[in-house]
Amino acid sequence: MIEPVVGVLALQGDVREHVQALAECGLRSALIRRPEELAEVDALIIPGGESTTISRLLQSFELLEPLRERLRAGMPAYGSCAGMILLGNGLLDGRPGQQQLSAMDAVVRRNAFGRQVDSFEADLDFTGVDGAPVRAVFIRAPWVEEAGPDVEVLARVPDVPEAGVAAGRIVAVRQGTVLATAFHPELTGDRRVHQLFCETVRAACRRP
Ligand code: GLN
Image 1 (spheres, rainbow, N blue to C red):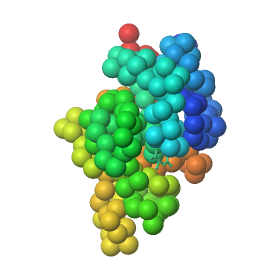
Image 2: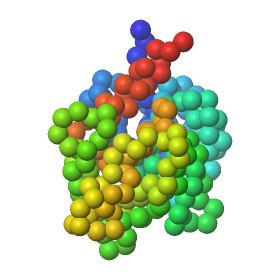
Image 3: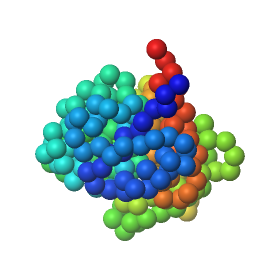
């Protein structure tokens, strides 16, 4: 069987870290900046970075519509942080004109953890990830404010007083073959979240 190729959207953000994580999971990757490159891959990762910048660059690189089209056609996708914002279909605290890809029925709140809390870490129970909790690094992160009936909640911030306003908030979701996390597993060296996505990609590519 031919192994799938996973594109990493390479307009802005922590692209290299995702490429490295994919390599460690045994999947080939390709950097995506043009529609022709997008057409060649079986799946896509949208990295963490700045969602307003990525949105703007998607438009100027004429990738926005081709990407929406691939997602509508069922291409598996994973977004971390800014990537989660882009994959949603509703946005709170976005910038005027900021685009989303509407690949999942989720309203995402941008910079949700508050301006004071630039970064925050927590150990999360993550559905579909076996073993120890996942150490999650949140950097000016969003959360999912509202998830539709077809969206599976995979992780929430622990509902403890130390979590403050973030307590119990939804920070990892899946709808079909689309996965999103508010945090950055690409930064920690724990590859279990990428493994989960890679299994989805392999399964989707085996289907006739
Ligand atoms: N705050 C960023 C945004 O709005 C996301 C931050 C991140 O990806 N680490 O896109």
